[in-house]
Image (spheres, rainbow, N blue to C red):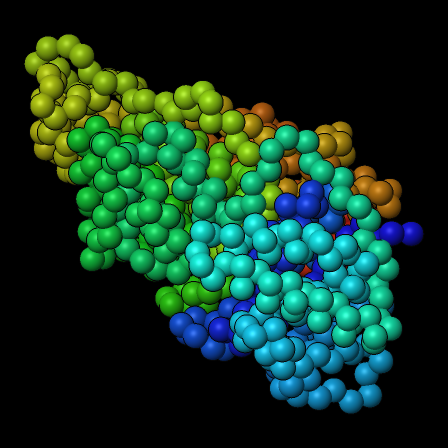
Length: 569
């Protein structure tokens, strides 16, 4: 039977082409009609250090990066020693025999990556040597990789043909070396091309595209991993009349400038990670207090402090909900897939405009770096929402009443004070208890405008529910599908709209005997948040800096379901 799924991990030192190899393979296979997903993890130094990237190729939608490896490509001995135990029983290890040797392994295929690349006249062709060997291992037609090579390196430069020819030669050398070894993993099934146009994109790019689709006009950011690519994307693409991108000198400058842009009537966004988000807390509180639209993207990484700056985690949820002092609770959108990153970027800008206040888009490192092919969004219609703008005469009371009111734009009618102190209807500072009551209730009542978020549900009659959030969605859904196939009575609920959560979803979860929440943090933050909403939630936690393996989730969920059934009996 042909293979429907293929997982390969490239491991070595930063700078050896580990990430390039994985992303190149993913791009080639996506162009051929396969579904692909990558996962990258690397140290925080600029160059060097242990790095690995995993590519999963499938004939159906890829939910997780995969547990067991079909192939490990080890660029050095440390990579071999650290990752060999993740190779499946029928898997193969392709190792760089020019760097180290492997003894007593009937799973290992040695290739001298550098020497084979030299034979092509292009020392940088080692990645194509490896891809050629992989093609042979799964009986993949070599022309798929040759077509990718030709498309990638046809750039209108005099050296294009030379590079293409040397890369094709490297593919052939790798293919033949693997062929003589006798290793073969079985033929990869033909691609079942997805319907409609597809794009290969990562989470940071998808967020950026979504925000631009909503009409983003201003982006101000300070570089910080793993959010920096959003700033770089905006610098290259948010251009033209009425658009402004600026690299600030600090996160405090970013958020205060953002508040100014929102006050001036612009759709504005910044991006950061945990340490920077903490610095933005007071500025976010100002935007909440003065009712000024803006979006803060927090791409989560391991913490606290510098923590694990290039590893993934889901430990900023409580900070995102409550970033400042006093009574405030942020709207939070946390996408779970690369495709959802686009719609999260879109909806975060729309939400900010709609309720006239700050919105937090909570992504995470695993999503930011993950490359995946997704349906190409339809941008033929206007997807953006615009704030209500005051069109009347002067004398307008901006903060009158308990509900949203139209927002004046500087230079137009309706002058007011955008005040961070408690204020009256005009915005002037006041300490009157009655005013603090009115303004507090006004600020919270506006959140009712955001209760239109969608959610997913399956098998809703089951008394036990699996409810992941963020990037844990994929592995959790993979585990859920396996458990249901095994006869486990379990329901599925999911939404990227963390707060406000869709009211129907909250009510449904309150009726469950148990809600199981897989999440990448120590404290069980989403489970804690659900318990505050009257839901009996318990967390499956992990804080390794890596995503869940599906196998572990299946085991832990099954145990929790079994224990709950015993308690019920």
